[in-house]
Image (cartoon, rainbow, N blue to C red; front, side, top):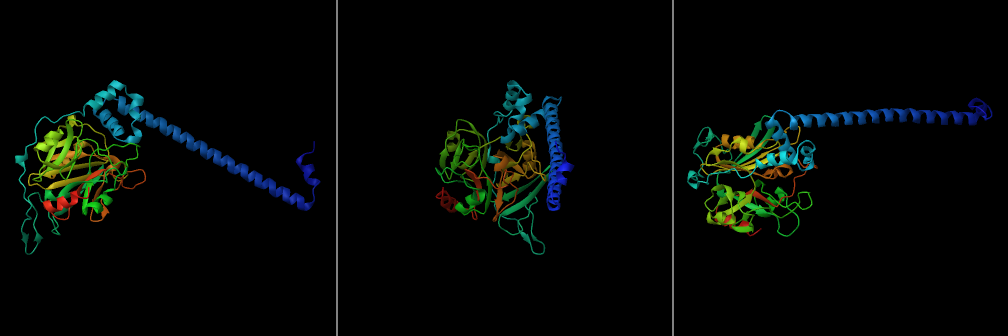
Length: 383
């Protein structure tokens, strides 16, 4: 058998040069292939080690000595649709059921409407310094009846819109029967609203968050869109602009003259009493909430989450923020990728959806550009 040297000697000079070039290219390809294989092997080993490390960390959090840490981590996974399977690796069905059971009905007192006295008048302005702060220290600098606040806490950032006149806040909804919800921006365009936040629960048939069907008790402009399933965790405005929170049946809501409301929870504050954190355990996620001060001003809050600049907040964080801003009643709304807050043509928050685009919604709390029953009636006709 001829060796490579003998084979080369039988070739012409031109053929020898071409053969040498071919062999060099082949050698380079082999060298590149070895580098790629080593890099791939390193990446795979890193991923495997990271995965094992992650599982180890998850085991410590779920099976370690801290019950609070276990519940917080488990609830974070339960509230994140893509990772609900993780607690099932380490926890039994009984342990998971016990954690979930802590989120059952927890409000024992009835809503007291007498604690709210509407005061939509703006404080007098100083001739030299301009608008004066209200009783809660907020200044409506441009006189539009809204105050936008940046919210910052340990591990999270968020945004709050304070609406001085509660009659400007309504529930808007996507087109019924369309099979698709509307983004908050589209919802505002539909109703002629200047801003708002996402609303309550909804039926998510295909897991993409694009449904138009609200879930639970839902009332829009006095029209019952969905009657619910009994005593739902509920938040809604009555005809006098007072924000009710609690567990309401349809008959309860009708008896209270609720005109706009949605189902979600838990209740964060009722009658000035902040819910005990042990009764509302939660994970750390993007959040949305609505509340009301004693003077009737409505507080619309969204906290960013699942992002580098903001991990997210717990229900206890929301309750504390609301209490710090004077809320005597407040309720958690749908969160996660649904969390959205929009005002004057732009989103204030950063969406945590996989594609970074605001999710389509079945309903939302919207801010009308003017107050009064006539505006609300006109908006309701768009539903």
